[in-house]
Image 1 (cartoon, rainbow, N blue to C red):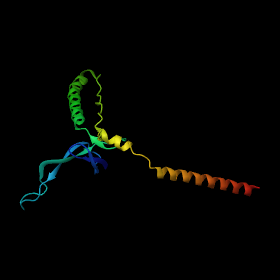
Image 2 (cartoon, one colour; image 1 turned 120 degrees about the horizontal axis):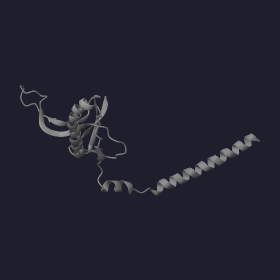
Image 3 (cartoon, rainbow, N blue to C red; image 1 turned 120 degrees about the vertical axis):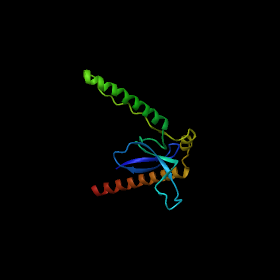
Image 4 (cartoon, one colour; image 1 turned 180 degrees about the vertical axis):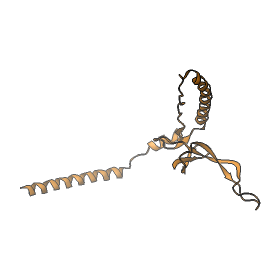
Amino acid sequence: MKEAIIVDLNGLFVEPTLVTDDVTGVFPMYKPNPKADGAEDVTQLSQEIVGYTVAIAVPSGLCRPKFDFNAWELYNKLLYLEINGNDKLVTDQDKNRNSIYKKPQELNLWIEGLTSEEPSSVRTYSIQPAATEKNLTFTEKMKNKHQQLVSIYKRLLK
């Protein structure tokens, strides 16, 4: 089992979930149909997409991860072109055996989801003076304790 991410329609992180190890890519999540008749199957899904399951690892360092669907489409197009191009190379490879498969470069599919205003609001908090005063008194107390311990050790060593 490995971790996958459930994202909303905008690609913003909602919650993690578990998937099997062989699952990769992006899969839509559909809203379930309410049971209308006894004859209808409850497992039938409606066509309304409520989010996506993304089985691609989130890079570290993102405060509010957002999946970039445009980059995902671009990646799939590049992958499709590479695969189609490699079909031609395989036939050529049978002839001359000199071509080597190269995996397409992976795009950065996760971006920062914070707006430009949110990081500045997070950074502009101020430290309360009471907290700094508490830190000063704590350090002074520690210095006093240290001096007391030094004097006790000196007396014991004499």
